[in-house]
Image (cartoon, rainbow, N blue to C red; front, top):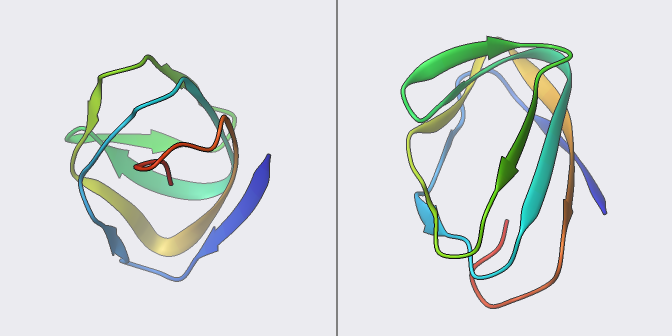
Length: 74
């Protein structure tokens, strides 16, 4: 499990999930796969899914990610 705090308008590189991942947005907003989401949003990514177009919003964001450490995870 990890807590991430992104400054405003940070673009995270696209990446392949080689293990399951759970993400919960605690504060702010973020763009995930082209869609803007707000605090209290949760997501699950399965093995082999591609995370694209992740960007923090104008105020940044804080989220918790729970995953099994692989080679391409957050």
